[in-house]
Amino acid sequence: MRAASAVENTPDAGGPAAAVRNAIVASDVDKSFGEGEARTRALKGVSFEARYGEMLYIVGPSGSGKTTMLSVISGILRPDAGSVLVKAQSIWSMTADELCEFRLRTIGFVFQDYHLFPRLTTAENVAIPLILQKRPWDEAIAEALRYLKVVGLEGRAHLPPVKLSGGEQQRVAIARAIVSQPDILIFDEPTASLDGDTGRSIVQFVRNEVLNDKRCIVIVTHDARIYEYAHRILRMEDGQLKGVQDGESISGD
Amino acid sequence: MKFSSLSGQTRLAYKLLINDRAKFAALLLGITFAVFLILMMMSMFAGVLQRSSSAVINVGARMWVMDPAVTTPSSSIPMPDYVQDAVRSIPGVRYAVPLYSGAGLVKLKDGTFQPSTIIGLDDTSLFGRPKMVEGKIEDIYAENGFIVVMDADYGKLQSPPIGTEFEINNNRAVIVGTAKVTISGLFGIPTLYTTYSRAIQYLPQAQFTASYILVEPNSAQDVARIKDEVKRLGYLALTEDEFIQQTADWYEFHTGLGMNILIMTLVSFVVGLSISGQTFYTFILENLERFGALKAIGARSRELVGMILFQSTFTALTGYGLGIGLCAGIIALAKARLPDYAAIMTFPSLGMALGMVVVIVAISSYIGVRRVLRIEPFDIFRS
Image 1 (tube, rainbow over the protein chains, first blue to last red):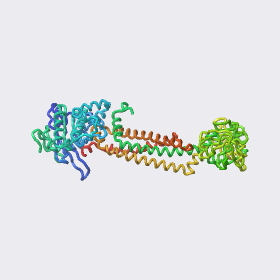
Image 2 (cartoon, rainbow over the protein chains, first blue to last red):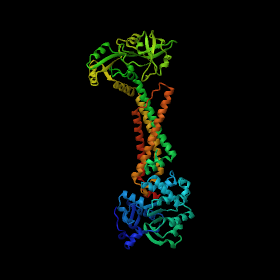
Image 3 (cartoon, rainbow over the protein chains, first blue to last red):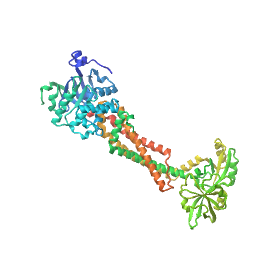
Image 4 (cartoon, rainbow over the protein chains, first blue to last red):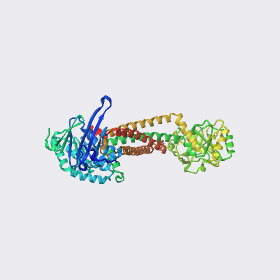
């Protein structure tokens, strides 16, 4: 695994301090899909950084490239050009196995549709990242129960996710994302399936209880109702970064 | 299953499988049904084949000399007496005795007739005699003495006790003992033992009399030489196993029985494959996005493949066990009701059923694994 210098790749490289501050640094990321005339440039030289202790939103209309960007920075989709440093490590110079291991231990995912296993209990769902890390079953479940308590669902541990409300399922997905104590959390449209109040309470919970100085949270959303909880908002359009806003200064579009 | 002995990922795969009870039941049903049908077919076939060689197995001679045109033990062609003398003179032959095997019509006391197999044992040695249940084997030398075999067809002679009289070709016959044999005959007719000389006296004969000549070689090395010498005489010498195999081959390839069993076995295989393959594929499809989510979280493809293989193998072995149990239960039940029911589970048929289950599982897993390997974690975000 090659650990590159964060400073030399940082868009606003500010010396060693920036390397420490930046959890993710994306530089000139380019990504296209399709061949020939059907070829579409989803990302056109996008550069940005996400900092520890920060809740960063990536927003924009459908097709603007925000999900593609999310996939690239989380080690899921290889860019055609550019570099991505996560925790000062160049993730796209890693082998496939190293990348899996890196994602497993460094990044927590909360998917739009949660993707919880309906045949497993809530606790078993939360324990999945630990089980993939080859932790003993009982130990993983015990840890999962601890995190279910963190998200306020300790009484629901033995229920299957289908018995839970949308908001509760979202909390289970959050517990699953943080159970392995990752430094980076990736949220894909976290409020898309929730009503306004529940969505806001979930994001508020994430900002107050999940975010800390050693963790960076990146959220892709087009739900303006939750913009107020962002530290910064990156606006994307046509595969390009169109601007950066201070999230706390806006209360929604 | 002892959970603590399983790795976390295996346990996860196990729970994902069995917690989906409807699909797990459908998968088990498919495999169990296929195994049951495959085993049942082959067990019946094995039972028929074993019964077809019952005379060979019951007599227990190491080598059998016969006319080359003989296809099965029941289709014996009488040989001239000199063959026995010629065989006895072959170096390597410890002893050679004649055996009569034929069919006789028994007239019972109430006037009804019952076809029966008559086995005539060598008068001097009584080689190939059955195990006595009642009476003594030497009573076979008594006037008109016959020993009746107490098998599933014993009742067809009205279950005669010792002392029962009947007629065979207008000759008086008396039951002097009852015996049991290892395997009942294929054709569902009773068996009577007597001496060779009485058998050829009671039953109408053509020019020649000896159905078979039973040979005991001095050693295993003499077998080939004896076969060559017998062949030179214009006859055929087979070891016990060769005769059983020849009989099995004849029933397999000349009666349509083998082809029918093969077709039924293949149909069972296809039915099992269809049910299990389709269900397993649906199971994978239903969880496909979640497998993709696991990939995104950090699961390696080989770990997901391992989970799928565990699920399919576990289902296969469980279904295989249930199929064997069901088949054994049905055979036991049938034998309890029908004593002459011919079906036996053999290790080759168990092996063949396992082989077919492995193929079913391999195909089902392959389809599932292909889908899981194809899904990209990126698709999860796009969905």
